[in-house]
Length: 330
Image 1 (cartoon, helix red, strand yellow):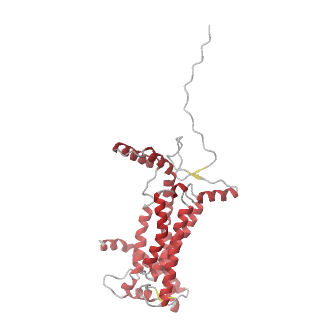
Image 2 (cartoon, one colour; image 1 turned 180 degrees about the vertical axis):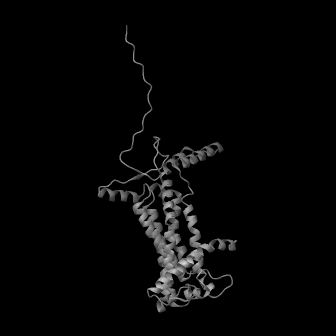
Image 3 (cartoon, helix red, strand yellow; image 1 turned 120 degrees about the horizontal axis):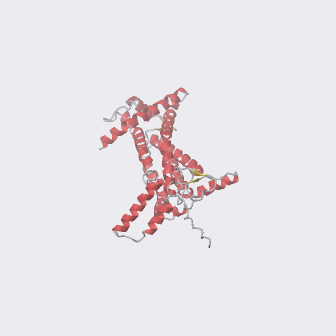
């Protein structure tokens, strides 16, 4: 199973190896060589991470739109749940499921569509992690760790022996007694945990509706908000410095990307949306309200993610039957 998984990841690892090697060539040409060779490889890891995240931007945008559509249909979803609350008989459960599926069909939403981009992103991150984490075994010529494109055994040895602040990129907190390694890995782990916390905190406190913060799922998320940094801190002591650099870079990218989205594309009903509304009002602009097709009770059809402009068009009433005029008396 593991071999099959590695076979699927190999094309991605091959592409990432070439990107990393290309970045190193660039940094070498601008003078990061000799004693600065370690910085060239460290920055190559940063450059590789940035390239991967740029390629995944379309998936991230799709995920944002899917999440916003799901948030917009929550009031209708809650109405359906309230309608069938306490009804456990098979007929009621079947009817509830049918209404939920009809809501998804009418609005063009899918509860799994926001998760799909994350699943698609996963192979890129697993491949990148393997590429960096296996450098030491590849450099030592361990069987099964063959060359990956330009990353031959010689190049892998050069990467893993490169140093920044006196620490090799292949060193980890638990595998080295060097004080410089302990300090550098500790700083990277703290920064990695802090960026994870900030990212999740701004998502929960600024970009979630108040109603969503009161449900049991949100309370579980709040617990994870404090547990995840601890988990990364504990597991980080096993990661090589090269992997910690990758993880910190992707956390910084995620934090900045999320800050932009929360500011410019806030979730409906969230604190961030209210702040954006006030900023636009101070500039004399009107905030564009997003709607989902199928939620309009008057039968109007609106393109997906299209803004409402101007006043809402009133529904046209049905034509009433013409009443016969009374006949004149003779």
